[in-house]
Amino acid sequence: MTRFWHPIADMHAVQASGELILERGEGCHLWDENGNRYIDSTSGLWYANVGYGRAEIADAAAAQMRKLHSYSHYGDVSSRPTTDLAQRISSIAPMKDAAVFFTSGGGESIETVVKMVRRYWSLLGQPDRTTIISRERAYHGLAGFGTSIVGTEAFKVGVGPLPGGTARVAWDSADALEATIQEIGPERVAAFFCEPIIGAGGVLLPPDGYLQAVREICRNHGILFVADEVICGYGRVGDWFACSRLHLDPDAVTFAKGITSGYVPLGGVIVGSTIQQPFWGTSEAGVWRHGYTYSGHASAAAAAHANLDIIEREGLVGRALALEAEIPAALAPLLAHELVSEIRSGFGAVAAVQIDPAVLADDPGLTDRVTLQARQHGVLTRTLVGGGLQISPPLVITRDELDEVASGLAGALDDIAAAR
Image (cartoon, rainbow, N blue to C red; front, top):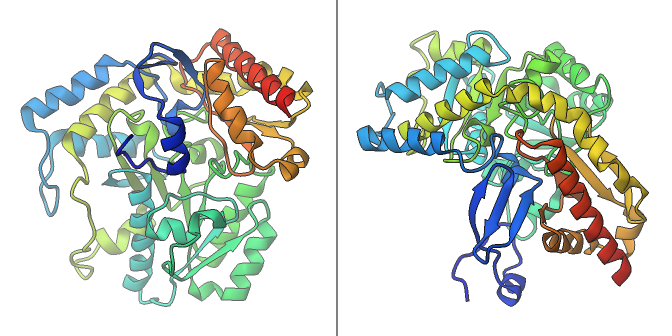
C-alpha cells in the first residue's frame, strides 16, 4: 500500500490498481521497474522538451551543488547562474528590456504575477484596479489565485471560498472580453490572463486573429496583458515564446516547465518596462514584500542554462516548427476511428485526439479507459478537460516515434471500442 498521495488522482482507485513506477528514461522513452517500455506522448506534464536521460543537465546541476547549491536571493544577494539566467531569458523574451522574477514553478508564477499587477496599479494610485479576467477552460495552476481564475469548475469543488476579484469570459470571443470589461468598468480591471494555447483545458487553439484582438482591447483600455506561457515557452510552439511568434508584445509572461525540461523545478515571471517602472524606477515603492524560499535557486538556474544550451545546439525550436506538420500527419489515420471526432493541432508540438463528445455523453469515463489501455500498447498519454488525449511529445521525437505513438493509440482505441 502506497503512502504517496498522488496529485490529480482518485486515491481509492490508485490503492486498488497499484502505481505505475517509472524507473528510467532515454530520449522519448520510459521504462517502468518491471522493464516495460513506453513512449512518452506528453513530455510528462508538457515539460520534457529535450527528452529524458540528458546527463549534461544533471552534471550542470551537480557541479553547482558541489560549489554552492544555493542561498537566499532576498534583498541584494544573487548567484552567478541566477543573474546570468535572468539576462539570458531577457535576451530572448518577447518584450524589450525584460526583467525576470524567479519562482519554483508555474503555480507560484501565477501567484506572483497576480500580486504584481495589483501592486502595480496601487503604486500608480489606482488601487481599485484589482479584477483579473481569465478565460473559460483556462488553466493557470492550482495555488490560491490560480484556482480562483481557472476556467474549469471541477478544480474548485469543495475547497470553499477562493480569492475574489476575478471574472471569466468565453475562451474564443474577443467581443466577450470587451463586453465584460465594459460591464465591470475598465477602471476596475487590472489584467487579462491568457494562455496562447489553452493546454490542460483541452488543447484549444485560438481562432484566427483572436489573440491580436484581445491584445488590442487590453491596450485600448490600459489593461495589462499577461500571457501564461508555462506550456508554450522555451521552444514548444516553434519560437522561444508564443508571444514572439505572434508578435503580441505582452506586459508579463509566466513560464516554467520547458525552462529546465522538468529536470529540476523552476519558473518565473518575465515583465516588460511598463510593469517594471514603478517598482524599479523610483524609490517610492520601497520593498515589495513578495518572494519564495527558492526564488532564483542557483542549482536550478545551472540546470536551466544546460537545458537552453541543448535547445540551441540541437535546433529544437526549429524542430518544434517541423513537428507542427509531422504530428497531425502521424495522427491523421485516427480520424477514421469510430471513437474519434477531431484532431486538434497546427501550432508547434501540441495536439489533442478528441474522443467524440456524443460518445462521452453516454460514457464519460471512456477517455480515461483509453489512456490506461494505451499503456498496454506502450504509449503514455493523459486525459484532458473535455475528453481529449494529450499529444505534446519531447521536441526530439522522430517521425518513426510519432508513428509509434499513433499505432499504440489506435490499438488502445480498438480495444476500448471492442469492449463497449
